[in-house]
Image (tube, rainbow, N blue to C red; front, side, top):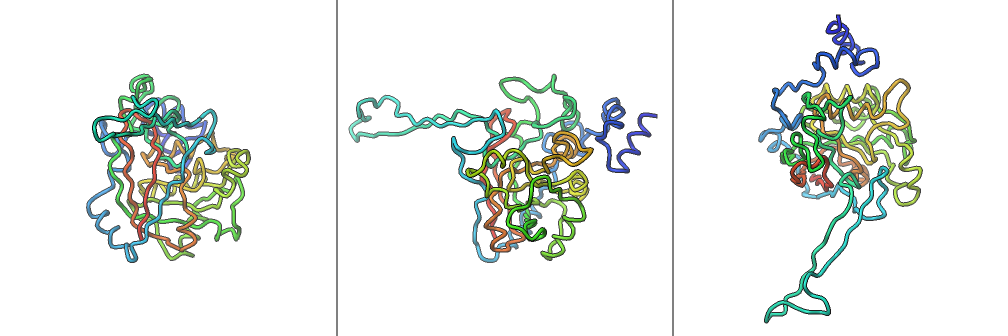
Length: 317
């Protein structure tokens, strides 16, 4: 009875509704990876040499775009995240140098939360009732000194086709309002307007103009945002994309849509489908140049057991 109820929920796109989750947890069908019981990289399994080679064919001008913003102590961050950097000169107090050639050097100590600024959410970031991607239970893999599974070090290099959907053009505004949800209708219509399609293995980015608030009105910036809605997340998952990102701090619509749970879009992408999330992406230059598709390149820092990574992906067109 519970199993039948669960599959009815899937069919209607409501697998995470309060009415259905009890059956889902009982059988854990929702969290099983189609790539096998030992899979730890999720949708990154879709990345292939052919996708990389095809993405390279998109490069016509060689122009590159840094998709990461600068990160510093003033960067707006989801509470209670903080960030600081200390530069030191070990053994060089008073202007002392090293050796006959008088070598001097600077080192830096980073102290802060990795989930600050432009970042990649790994598959160990968000779960559902302490169950994470591929049915990994919190009590079995999460430790204070690092994740024992789903660590950010497992993420392979991303070299694939990237696309950006300009939602400011869709809504006819410089900045889309907080709480605006992009679902299948909005996603398909804007893709059609731009003359592009979403393909298997893509990285899909959304431009909303929301970054205009960062550093100027951080209170509003962090209080809400436009973004992907629940139906939109399910739709993108059905398209088998590798990652979804935006120029916002959480990618999904906040305030959450009526009837949608807390960070439920994160659950759909990460926990249920192994799709990575890219937050605070610098999409403005892409939208300005109408660079709708491009070669997307990302190499995440391989910190063993890490949950997230501060990143600067590159788009090349």
